[in-house]
Amino acid sequence: MDSARESFHLDVIEAIATHDVVSLFFPYAMRSWIIDMRHTLLSPPMLIVDGIVGSPDARLQSFRRLRPEMPNPAELTVVPWIGHVRQLERTGVLAAIYVRCREVGQSALDGEVARCYEELIKAEINVKRQIILGVGMQPLWRRPQG
Image (cartoon, rainbow, N blue to C red; front, side, top):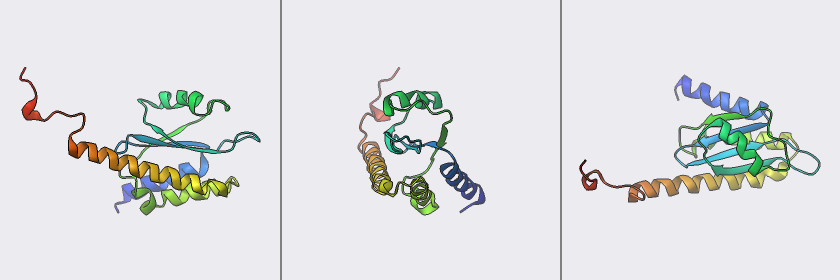
């Protein structure tokens, strides 16, 4: 692995370890994984897979829908994951997510981490399938001349 890529993965691991709200977005899966470690007595930390949005500001505004019981985060770390979902495991990022969840005393979130990871893998497979089948696309040779 080249040093720039390794440095990026270490930066992502550091962000997960130190920030309360991280949004990893996966263009290949057309999804975002939101890791929100904020909590109250009535609202536990939350892991959410959501559609991708057009901007960091749009992601910040989405918290009104995703966590209406909590105030919008004061700070949001947005990470573009330009790779495949399974690379989370190989790079140590998935392990960092498990560690972060356990650090806030929520080993009960292990199942949610696994569920989100599997959901992202399935979404990525679905996007690849749609590309191969040409769903929503028109071949160049069939486009109208104009």
